[in-house]
Length: 63
Image 1 (cartoon, rainbow, N blue to C red):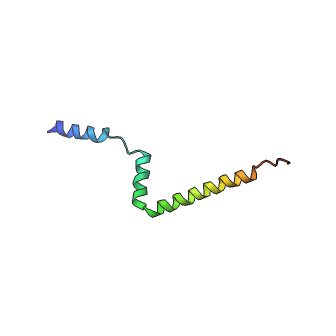
Image 2 (cartoon, rainbow, N blue to C red):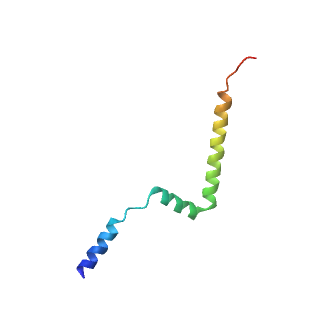
Image 3 (tube, helix red, strand yellow):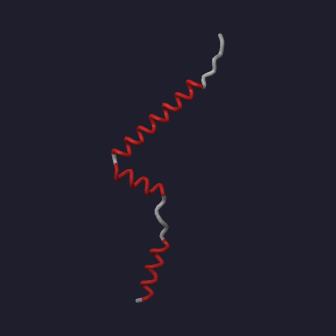
């Protein structure tokens, strides 16, 4: 009987905690549209930043 308990305890201790990617995916599925809207806003903000840097960094070449 005690050997079963120790093997179960070892099995519980041996499993590593879930990775950050798995936790993030679980949260994304649970929150649904909120995650999608935040991702969309982040993507738009990033594209805007890249365009701003491209416009400000454009070299002026005389014709």
